[in-house]
Amino acid sequence: MNLADGVQIVSFVVLAAMMLGGALGVVLLDNIVYSAFLLGFVFISMSGMYILLNAAFVAAAQVLIYVGAVNVLILFGIMLVNKRQDFAPVPKAWLGKAATGLVCVGLFVLLGAMVLATPWSLSTLTPIGDGALVAIGKHFFTDFLLPFELASVLLLMAMIGAIVLARRDFLPGELAEPDETVLTLPERPRELVSSKK
Amino acid sequence: MMQLQYFLIVAAALFCIGIYGLVTSRNAIRVLMSIELLLNSVNLNLMAFSNFLDPQGIRGQVFTVFVITIAAAEAAVGLAIVLSIYRNRDTVDMEQFNLLKW
Image (cartoon, rainbow over all chains, first blue to last red; front, side, top):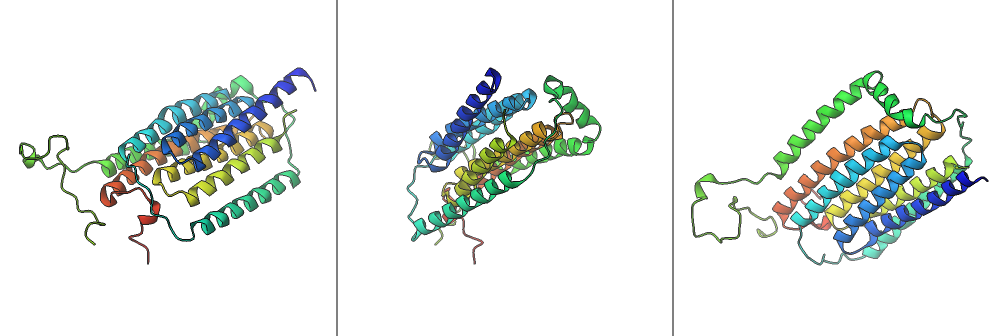
């Protein structure tokens, strides 16, 4: 084992430990704000994994899109629905958790056995390395052109859909009434399903 | 020498953690975060295959970029749905989103 391999192994182990620890924190921590920040931590260590796999462009895209957009969006979502409430305990909740944990461990064992037992046909070519950006661009505009265009249409649809779903319904006629509480936004009075019972 | 199997096993572990969080979380936003974990583990699989099995064609990286795109769209729509549900039910508890339950 030469020096480069040792560095690769050590950084892989460190990144894997960061990633799995962060993921466990995301799932298991009680405070959801800590979970969201740990999710960003997981994304950053994932981009480190991509660099280990000779994919600098996708690593940069991972940091930009996941940490910069998705994680910030999730933090905004947490702040918009920031309601401190203790969830009512469900009877036999531990049974569901134990069963889920058992199934997940079993799935992991199954996947691990499959990974270790399969004879992978490893390629002996040298990785393309820094030429990956040019290669990805060629793929996008030749053999993956249709998915590329469909992805842009899908992004437009998702943007419009998110705006339509999350929009508040304003009542323009009632904006000037001063008898409302000062600190609330003018909004159509909603009927809570839980309050009708 | 880095091995393909290391990356695949780490991705499998991340996938299982994501499944566990997806099933057991009570908070709707934590469910969305678990879905992001699942998508990331799939991305890691694709990148590992791209590097070790197809190092010149790198189709796996192209697929990873597509998955990242879909994940961004999914996060936006998912959070909009959670906000809408929160306005209607005044809670983010997954156990109380049961209007369509039998």
